[in-house]
Length: 581
Image (tube, one colour):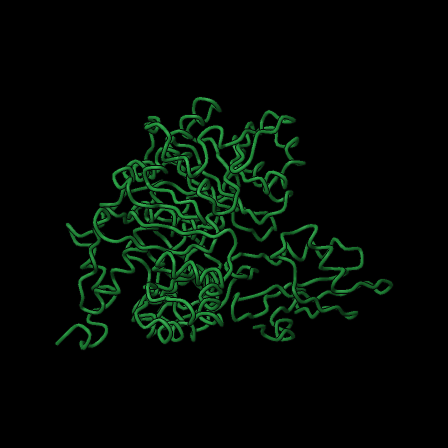
């Protein structure tokens, strides 16, 4: 009987994991005690991200980054990283553990700044390039960044805030020039040249550095329930473990069908080519795309700004093999009116996560891309992105599940009394594994609430079935996700409360077919005042990033509904908003 004709699945998740992690296998496990916690780790994974970038030199002839007419090979990228790493060390005094902020669009310079920091043991600190100047000031100050690598747009956004950032010694401007008025502002091109010229740089070695797997590697900011973002601190091992989690979940799909997982030779086989429409500053963009690509000699194509019509032309021209990032992107490509005008036959994978997705999406993908495999995953900034992925046939069978835990991970559902619940019982999801971040930067109280004995308390409400598949039902944290962007309601509510006419405010998610959710608000105005929804939108736009501004604001005179404990009944408010297309 052929594998295609065999019953599915041919073995359980547990049996697959046992087979895939056996001695000598690619995903072989070894137990290690890390920060006092016993964890399963991937024995054959690279030790550090420094090792990863050093190893990339061997496929210098392959392309790594494509942005418009800029095509950067691995060899050119390595030269740029080596030269920038040396300048960071020698000219700007960057030492191990110093924070290097990267704040820009998905230009090739983003990757060079990220890898140069990691290569010398500094902590790469991506900041949300959608943030306002005030929000960026907070991120730069909170992280204590010594150097920031920005594009001209972000420089103008933070320029007025620079006098307050006394610890920020240098601002390197990619795709821009020096600033005679401020000696801290230096052109990145004067140090390493433009992206098109990196291949002509002299050969150089990355400076020596002592970097270990448990050393701090990145700070990725995630919004918090206090309204202030928290920096999730990840180690080199954690980020690399995320990559192996993703690869293991994909391999398990083939094993479940009775097939051998494909074995790729990065030096010989054709590269996978994702069209990356999500920002590098996301855990998904950096940890699930940028890092895996350099580990496997793949190519990443980026855009100045996501545009589904332009994306269709790029898919056809570059022979893109993977699209996705968040469900919104998949929907926009699938339903674009010009879709049939372009050759999209190169697409092999449609992968997404980070936002609620309709179960009908996987069926639509299968119908319109017969040769493509769909996948949906779950992860958090605090888990360095993916901890589970639902892939291929398993996803078709369980389209409302985000998958089963990766082999190195332990998942459990915890009840309100702190007890571990059984199969299909609903409670809060806790996850444990080598890819978890270790703490929130300089926030011990928040760390103690989220990181408990090696577990990350996710704040997501769900259940786990008998075979280990996770079904998420709601979020314990008061948060919504718009197109993959986390938006904490209290931050938007605080901006609304700042308006003198507002007495009470509540923010909820409005279901949206493409974006997952949009921001809705219900406000109570003071008896003697008036305000319009447009006025409130303009007011909040001055305080928070544009994607957080409510698209629909309902204004009322009567009090908002509250329960006996005084909490606003948001479940009732959500019913007031019709889903948006």
